[in-house]
Length: 434
Image (cartoon, rainbow, N blue to C red; front, side, top):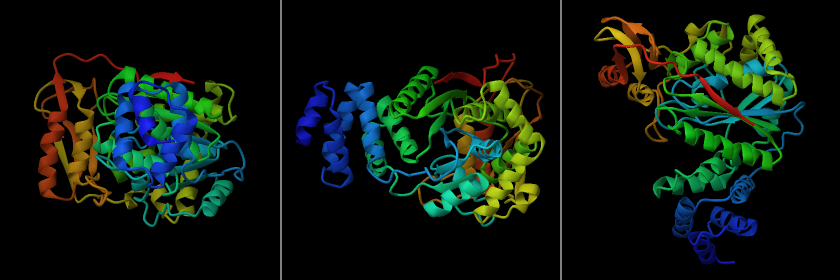
């Protein structure tokens, strides 16, 4: 088998066989096939697309390019959740203790953020001493003991995806549905869960800006999961404005804690309920959405979800007193209001620009080497559709640096479009595919 023939076959619109896909993935992972040939193949795939079978075979080849995590020694049906990401998306921080308190074992691998916000691991490190550097044995033991563990993604989990993504990033071949879906799902399948719930974001602050593209990606990933024999559900949710009111690592942790106390923002609480309901049904802990929602409501009302977060933080070396007293979490030295310059209604919030404000303040990474300031960020006071008067506070910027603050102020004010009439409200949940 020759790489040249595989490139030519795909360039001419042919469908690659399982053997051909395995050949190029194995060869590229081992360093036996050069970048320039795989670049040519990625461009051919970009233009000629892949069939459902090819996409599945590519996903499985990437999943099997490294370690396939064996979670069979964890009691119960393991349900993983993945979000395609957005601004203010702290869902895992509240959702995982909620479902764990309902009896679903949560064995999750998460990453750090690159771009305008921190990842789940960055946010969790707001708890002093918290560590995600667990051995597989510790990881499994923690899940069996307290029902929840989150660890950093190991270098040996789907290494082919890491290499391929870096190459696609510099060859303008990221934006292909099969390549995006196989990248996400290869890591999820390698991580060993029995069922997967996907939160696919759409809107100005999402990777998939257009609704049609978000539904197409969701459909592609659900098909891959089903073909791999895993129960897979995709929830398509709105990211046309930040999720909840907090954007920034420690601020988002505080909002997640408030949500577990039953005091969270309406949109964020509802998303946790929707995703949590799907996780409980996929894990066999509820037969209907109504039953699942009742169970999730109960663990918030009786405090068991909040206690689960404390147990989880303590088990991974963090200070659990910060769960009961969030004032112990990192705090910025300056909190500055940004006010509306006219009367009207919040017609639009440029969601991605709010994320960039957090990055300007130091709450994200411009490069992998950047150090995140966990204390900075934004607390919104107004969301889309809210009435405002001139001088009303739109949001508070939490900052530690005057220069960064000034750059973020203008960006934040310009992210808000104040209109004369109230805009139509968009539904938070656009659809559910399974």
